[in-house]
Length: 366
Length: 267
Image 1 (cartoon, rainbow over the protein chains, first blue to last red):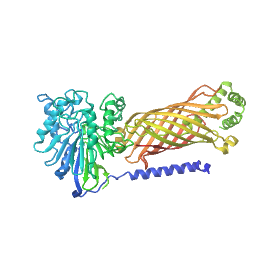
Image 2: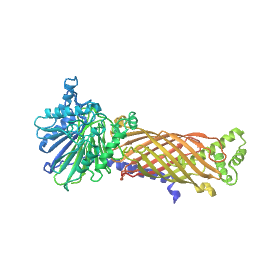
Image 3: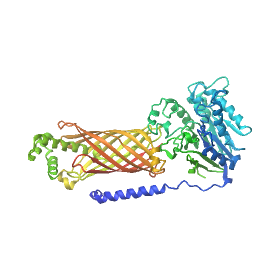
Image 4: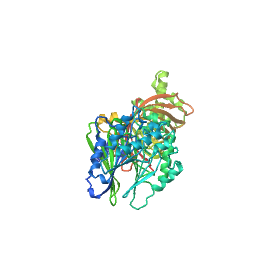
């Protein structure tokens, strides 16, 4: 009997079965991401996640921002747009009078303008907003906060955490609790506090506050945590992608996952999440879109940093990846349903602005 | 080919009681060839025997590991079966198991233990087998995919280029003959599709047999190539299956077909 299995016929049969299995799985992969339109009444809050949008084309709005504006304007009262950092490339808001000031304002204004009336928006700081990790970072963040308030007028658009503080700041909207962090504060190599910092700036206290805020205060609470830096990535900052990827594995740059500083940040956040992992930790930083299995830290890790087509980059599919979109701009949409259910939808666009929803998944089953 | 088959069969039987070099010298006599050429033939036989007996020649190669989170080290298990057919002499079959550690989402280090047997119908009374052991490091050098993805129209495509180094050891391949091998390869994998990953791979290698018995010929090198296809993340996220084909570029070695199943435990 053992010999039968090793005959050419046995080997050939095995190969045929293998190919059939492959074909079935391959066929099964097509078109699974289509989703029926939800009844609008069932949606309590819609959160749009768009990161690294600080490089808009100076001649046109661009598909991601344009599309977010259209989506949010359908139901602005229940819409929250979260800009996940790197809101102004290349180095945040400079002092007024500098030659870069007007263009920096233009970049920020394009994003603030995408927030429809009656919709809310939160700008999370990123490393480029901290003067590209430079010594002027703390002051650049404060300038950006002031400029956002100035551009927003009477709309509920603001930078969180404000005043160059690390956070966390919790925003409750119905079932949703969004906890916002300034992760660059943890990684910055220059001044991160001064006399104007009216907030906790002790790492241990920040972690303790985060641990407290992710603890659900009601049974149906949906907790999301937002920060600029991802906890996991298959992009350049994870040491992947092309010939430059390996250079990100040496750990010399705090912006890279493998660096000691980044690891300290991630360990601190993950320790805060241990007792009550949030539904999702959402981030930008990588210029692509990734939906990842969160493991012990969170149920899901979302990376949505494809807000500027000019910046889009590679992403490798990891074993933890549910979905990956590379070299395409886009954003994510989370619909928090009234009683139960959180639906994620990923939108991606080509350089010509064509595209649409490319992936969907119930993060919390309805 | 017939002469070579006779030589190998005689070699197996006589080696039970004599030292290998004496046997090889005796085997060379009937061919009435110049001594240098005879020695080359014997060396060739021993070289092939060693390559085929250790994991590098006994088991199929598998694709570079799927990239994973840099945050964790992942443990995995591996089951492999290989069969070498079309060679001069009886077919060889091997079964093995292994444990792998994927370090920080990229490189993987593994140990392997298994057993190889010969086809009893051809080998007759000499159909007994031997154990083999191996260790292998596979280093992820570059993982990318946009260029390949654009060509294939699949923007989830990932290409992975790596290097690998392996050591193999098989005691008592024949009486008083242990086999040791060492190889360096350059594996290239291409994975496609979003949910279940379809992966194809090729691994050109160069392999040396290393003298680890008391006597034997000096170290020699051979080229080896492996190709294969597989599916990753089938059902469970950590479950992969690969079908591989391997060729050692030496005459009389045939081809090796193999099946590998790996499972990586995610937290």
